[in-house]
Length: 448
Ligand code: ADP
Picture 1 (cartoon, rainbow, N blue to C red):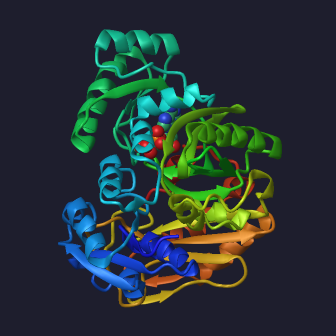
Picture 2 (picture 1 turned 90 degrees about the vertical axis):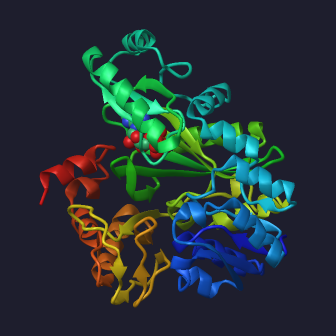
C-alpha cells in the first residue's frame, strides 16, 4: 500500500477519499487554495499544503504546484477525486514520471476515453452496443447532411472533447442541421478549446443507465451493477438510484458482464463508469468516465463495497478485494445532490451557512464538506452535499428519503432541498416512471 496519499481535490470528495485512506491506515495530505483554508478536508487531513489563489486554474488545476506539494510532503500517490485533474492524461503522465502513482487508469486509457469518438470506436470493438452515428468527426456541411439523412432525424451534434453536458445541439430536420452544427462547434471551441463534433441518433425518451466497473490492470474486471441517473437538469444529474427501476436481474447481469469483460480485455486499471442511454430494451453506449463518479455512493450502499478502497488497492497493485460472484445487490439506494442554489431558478447562492443539521439513522449517509459557520466560496461548484439513503426495497428507501429531507436543515443560503421534497412526493417518481426529459418538463410546468 501507499506511504502517503495526496488528495488533489476539495469539498465532499476530498473528504470522501480522506476517509477511505484513514480506514486503510494511510496518512493523507490535503491541498487547498487560499479560499479553502478553513475547509473540512484541510482540517481533517494529516498535513496540508496551500497551492495557490482561489481560481481553479491557479490552484486545483495547477499541476506544478501539486507535484511540488507531493515532493515537499513525500506523498507517493495522488487521488484526483472527480472533476479538476481526474481525467487529465498529462497529469497522470507527469506524476508517473516523478515516480508518484496516479490513483486511476493509465494515461493512455484516459486519453482514449476522453476523446468521445475514440471512446465510441473502442467500445464498439470491445462488443459494447453504441448509439448509431458518424464514424468520426464531422466538419463538412454536405457530409453532415448525408450522415443525418442516413441515421434519420432527429440527430444530436456532440463535442468530441465534451463534458458536463456542454456543446450538444439537437437537429430535428435538415433545416435545423446547419445552425446546430455551427452552434455546437462554436460552443465546443469556447468550452474545450477543440471544436471537433460528431453526429449521433437523438433518442427521444431514453433513460440514462450507467454501469460501475473496476479493473485491476492485469486482466481482471468486475461490474458493480447499474445506476439510473435519468433525472437531469441541463444534462446534469440531480437524483441517482441503484438499481434502476427499469431493469430486471437478467438485463443487469447481461449488460454488466459485457462491461466487465470489456474492461478486463482492455487491461483497464481503476474504477470507471460506462454510460448508456437505454430505450425500448436496448442499451446505447454514450461515454466512459475514467474516474470515481459523484453518484458512486448508491452503488456502495447496495453492494457494501467501498469503491475508494478498491481504487487504492488496484492502484497499489494489491488487486481487487472481490470477484464477480462475490458481488451481490441488496435493497435500493437513492442519492440527492443538494446544491447551494435557488430550488426554482437554480441561481447559485454562495454565502455563509448559519445553521446546519443533517439527518441520521439506519440506512442514511450524508457526504458533505460543510458545517455551520462555513462560507461557501463563489469560485467552485455549488454542491453542498449528497444525501444517500438505503432501504430493503424502493418503497422503504423512498419513505426513508422523505423523512430525511424533512430533517435536513441548511440555513443562511438557498438550497435545492425543497426541490427534492417535492420530487419525493411525485407519483411518477414513486413509480420509477421517468426518462431523461422528465425533470426538465416538470420544472417547466412548475415554473416560478
Ligand atoms: P457529457 O460528457 O457532456 O455529460 P454525455 O455524452 O454523457 O455528455 O451526455 C450527457 C447527457 O446528454 C445524457 O445523459 C443525455 O441526457 C443527453 N444525450 C447525450 N447523447 C444523447 C443522444 N444520442 N440522444 C439523446 N440524448 C442524449
